[in-house]
Image 1 (cartoon, rainbow, N blue to C red):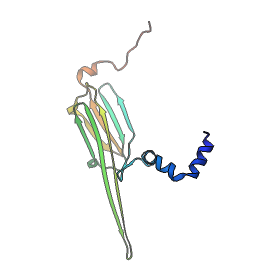
Image 2 (image 1 turned 90 degrees about the vertical axis):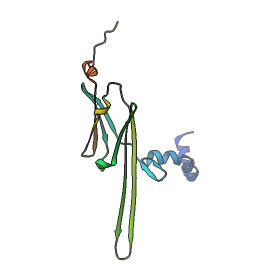
Image 3 (image 1 turned 135 degrees about the horizontal axis):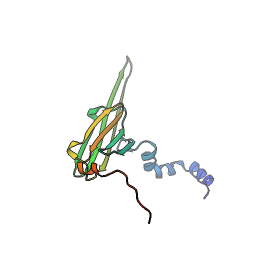
Length: 149
């Protein structure tokens, strides 16, 4: 089936097509709406240095108090919930807006991370975590040369 005929079929039966793919369309096109809540997945960068791992999470518009960071076993979970309520009134109308957004990301920690020394800082829309390595892990070189035999 060519894309041209697929387009015609979709135009003829937009309701059927849209209803069938609605869960996936909502999830991918709208940042993920689940049970009336907006779920966004922020961009994450992970870098390894000699002394630690650095995790950066892009989360603009949040406050430090919006984040929850937990370590359970070797799983690090970063989650955030934010709820906003706005109300505007004039003589004849009242307008209320409610916005709820959340996300949760989990990472498996390497054995060489000192879990009780994990540090987090939030500034300029970026949450930064420092995961220090154990002393013995720092001594191992980050890169090595491998000979081809």
